[in-house]
Length: 567
Image (cartoon, rainbow, N blue to C red; front, top):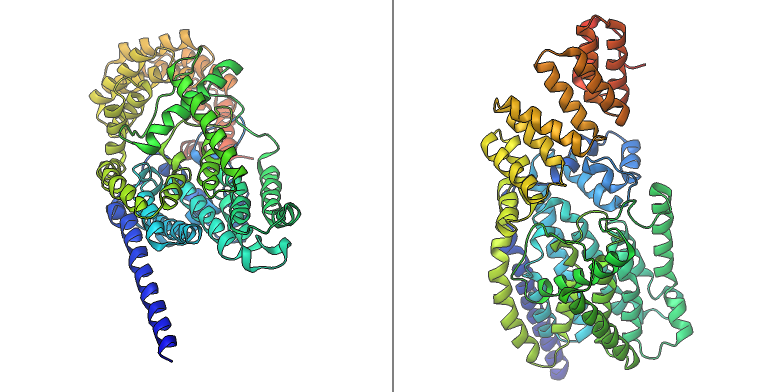
């Protein structure tokens, strides 16, 4: 009786100790990011979180779930690349409850982050067998300075959901897999969590082999045949994802246009990107909201470091697999989830971003948890305060557009893209002198970045600097004669100087270059109406409405003329 009571007391004490240690990890995840609850929408948030997410019935849910994620970014695409219905539906739920109030969206992001840290801790506990080791690794992960881009940026929810369910899948593989006798069913619970991760972000597909690896490392008697059968649910989850993705965006596996052109530069740049990620993972003292990644035309030191790191990672993983060591898991997770994100042919947007490290940084947490004895706590004791000091200013960056875009210029003062983005922000805020200053600087830094001339001319025009604005549009057309928005801008300038015939020619050229350009159709109609060509004007107003049924100016013009809408 006394022995049983003692065992019960020990179990209660152990559970209490684990609860305290887990609370440390969850608080480390929560407290530094708590102020994000009062943050605004920033960057892509303002394009994604719009009336496009409104749901009035099942048909809207089906429409949103079957829409490529990048279709919500407000940019025309040659082909869509991202299929993330779980992320979109989570934003739909927030919008249904909160509308345009950013606070609840940030609250959801924060809850998802805390949940991701919870499941990572549970996985580390199963892997290491020690709550103390799991806590050491969990603390390092919870305060990693690269995470604010995923936590405080609402559009970073893709990483939070994918990470949460990848970590849940790894935990289920270790905690439930060995208890299930039928090999075909061992990873069935894990596959369910993986499927949600797959529908959240593509990186989960690369992580899926790590789930099978986790079971293989835990269940030593499992032979090759049984392991192959156990992997079936994971393969089925991947197949379901592929089938749904193909139905929505087709069979292509990458962007239509690569950010880096040519096989040689793509190869060289990919290893250089890996070299740039490694310091961000282990010593993130040079973080930024936007990274400039110039294509490499010949090998340099960054390429050499990246290539050597890839060889070391592959060699270490091979040795760990041959020894069936638990260290194979952090090495595999890092290789599987970071390696593909360095391959520039796969990336449709920015080639580097802090949020791309959200899942790969878990490899660092796993490595800390696998360190022997007090070494894990020693490592966490050094890394956690170091990371925390770096984390707090990164959280502040995401407060609003001003803090975000000014940080880009501060971190990369020679980046033309950072200056262009900040200039665009100041233009929207009607701070025209600053808008002109940054757009001009962007063009000086990178004359091939011709879009900045369009933005510069718009700001100059509103400042009353008409001659300069007109000259910059003319320069833009010399540099890029097939750019439809430049012809549209030229038409607007001709209207302002009372040259309707020239304006009509410019609008016609804009429409020829881009037949789906509602403002050009509408403004062309206005000029034609002024020239007395009423029926032609009505036809262009109707074309504008046919392209965009919600185009207010065209609808008003049709109503003013007593004409019917788009037919």
